[in-house]
Length: 105
Image (cartoon, rainbow, N blue to C red; front, top):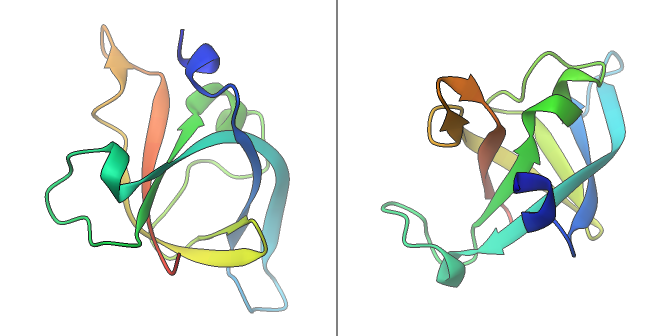
C-alpha cells in the first residue's frame, strides 16, 4: 500500500557526512516528496518538505536508517534532514516508512 503512495514519486539520494571526504551516498531511493501545503504538520515552515522513504528500501541500502544532519539530494538541491519520524508510519509495530522533515527547499 505504501509503495503505491510513492507512485508517481521521485528518486532521491541520501548522503551521510555531506561535504566530508568520508561521505557515504545511496542513490536511487524511491520516495514521495510532500510540500508543506499537502500536510498538516505542526512546526513545518513554508518551503520545507517531508519525504517518505520505505523502510525496506532504506534497509536494503548501505545506510542503516536516515539521521538528522543527513542530506537528501533532490531535484538539484541538497536538503538537510531536520527530523526523522520512525514512529508514525508503522503497522502492528513494524516500521513501514520513514518521514524525513527537510529544510533548504
